Amino acid sequence: MPDPRPVPFRGGGFSPVRIRWAGPAVFALLLALVEWGTRSGWISNLTLPRPSDVAATLADLARSGMLWTHLAPSLTRLAVGSAMGVIAGIGIGIAIGLFSLIRAGLVPLVAALFPIPKIALLPLFVIWFGIDEGSKYALIALGTFTPTVVATYGAVDNVDRTLIRMGQSFGLRWSSIVAKIVLPGALPGILSGLRVSLAIGIILLVAAEMLGAEHGIGAYILEAGSLYDLERLFAGVVILSCLGVATSWGIGVLERRLLRWRS
Amino acid sequence: MELTLDRITHRYGGMAVLQDISLRIPAGEILCIIGPSGCGKSTLLRLLGGLERPDAGQVLQLGDPPQGCLNPLTYVFQDFALLPWRTVAGNISLVLEDHGIRGRAARAIIDDVLGRTRLSGFADAFPRQLSGGMKQRVAIARALAVNPAVLLLDEPLSALDAQTRELLMEDLVALWTRQPFTGVYVTHNLAEAVRLGHRVAVLSRRPGRLREVIGIDTPLADRRPGDAELETLQARLWDMMREEAVAADQELLNA
Ligand SMILES: Nc1ncnc2c1ncn2[C@@H]1O[C@H](COP(=O)(O)OP(=O)(O)OP(=O)(O)O)[C@@H](O)[C@H]1O
Ligand SMILES: [Mg+2]
Image 1 (cartoon, rainbow over the protein chains, first blue to last red):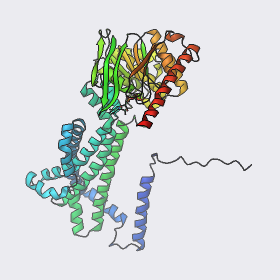
Image 2: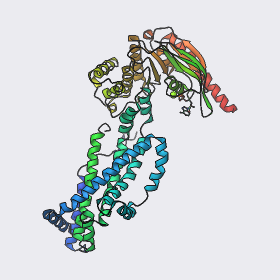
Image 3: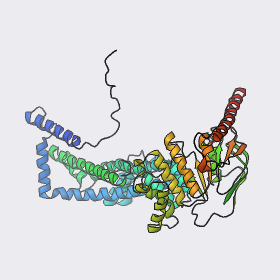
Image 4: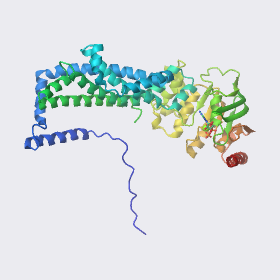
C-alpha cells in the first residue's frame, strides 16, 4: 500500500478579496525606487524628477493657494460635464434597453459617435458653445455620454428575463417592473460603466484645458511642459492620478452601498 | 373560479407544440400535467396564465375570482424568480405594492404567508442567505400573498434535492388541506404527480396532445410515499411515458 497523502488543493483564486495594503505598497515601492535612483545618480535628473522634489513642489502649490486656483475650475468642469453626460447617457441607455424603436434608431448613431476622438471635435464645440466653459462641458459630456449609453443598455439587456416574466405574471404595472426589477438589475452594469466613463472624463478634461484655459490642471501641466519643468509637470500628473483614484474610490463606495445585496 | 382549455393549438415558427387540447380545471382541485420533455407543458402553462396567446382555441375563465383575490392566475417558477436585491419580506411586498397595500396591512399579509410556509424568522433575510427549498417556499409564500384563484406551478420542485422535495410536497399538501386551492402542477416527476394530483393529465410527445386524464380518489392527506395503489398508478404512468419516448425515437429513425 502506498502512503496516504492529502489531495492537492486547486480550488483557490477567481474570487476578488479586499486587500487594503497592496495598492499603497506598490506606490510606495515605486516612489522609493525612483527616489533612490535619482539620489544615487543612476537615474539622471533629466529623465525623471526626484519624488521628494515633486512633493515639495506640490506643497508649495498648496501653500501659495495656486493648487486650489487650478483645482477648482477643473473639478467644476469635470463635475458639470460628466454629470450632464452620465445622466443623459443613463437615461438614453435605459430608453434604448426598453424600447425597440429607440434602440433601432439610436444604437447605430451611438456606434458612429463612440469611436470619434472627441478631442478632434473641440474646435467645433468652441464655435458652437464659445471658448469658455461651454465647450469644455460639451466635450466632457459627449465623452462620458457614449460609454455610459453602451454600458447602460447592455446592463438593461442583461437583466434576468425570468424576473421580468415574474413581474408580469403578478400583474405588476409597467412602471413598477421598470423601477423595481429592471433598474436595480441593471445597476451593477451601470456602475461599472461609470468607472470607465469618469476616467474618460478626466482625460478629456485635461485635453480641453490644454487647448485653451487660463487655470486648470491641464493648463498647469501644459505650461510646465513647455518650460521643461519636470517637477511641476509631475506635480500636475500626481494631482490627476489622485483625481482618478478619488473617483474610482467614490464609485467603490457607491457600489458597496447600493449593491450590498450582492455579496 | 374554473378554467377551461378549449381546443388549444399552438406552434412556434411552424413547429406544432400543442395540438387540439381541451381540458377542464375545476375549482379546488390540483391537476398535474406530465409528458415527455419538450412536449409543451411549460407552453401550456404560459397560455393558461395569459403570458402567451394560443394560435387557435382559447383559454376560458368561468366565474369570477373570489373576493380579495389580487392576482387570479399566479405562477410559481422552477427557478424561484426572487429579486436578489430584496429581502424575503420585500419580495412578498413587491406583489402587494401595486395594489396599494403597504405598511401595516402588508405586514399582516407577509406575516401570515410566511407563517403558512414555515418561514416566520426569515422576513429580513436576503435570498442568497437561503437554501433552495427555502427560496421556493418564499416563492410559494409570495404566490399565496396575492390570494390566487389558480396557482400555476411549473416544475416547482425540480431544482431541489430529494429530501427537500419530499418535505415541500408535504407542505403543499398541508397548505391545500388547510385551504383548498385550484392548482395546475407541471412536473417530470411521476411520484409528485401521484402525490399531489387529484387528476393527472398525460400529454403525448410533441406535438403535445392530451393522451389520457387519470383521476385519483385517495385524499391528498392520506397519500404516503410507498402506497401500493399509488405505486401501481405511477408504474402505469411510467409505461405511457416510455411508450412515448420509444415512439419518438422511432420517428427520428424513420425521418
Ligand atoms: N419562446 C419559444 N420560442 C420558440 N420555441 C419555443 C419557445 N418556447 C418553447 N419552445 C419550443 O416548444 C417546445 C415545447 O417547449 P416547452 O418548454 O413548453 O416544453 P416542456 O414540455 O415544458 O419541456 P420540459 O419538460 O423540458 O420543460 C420545445 O421544443 C421548445 O423548444
Ligand atoms: Mg418546461
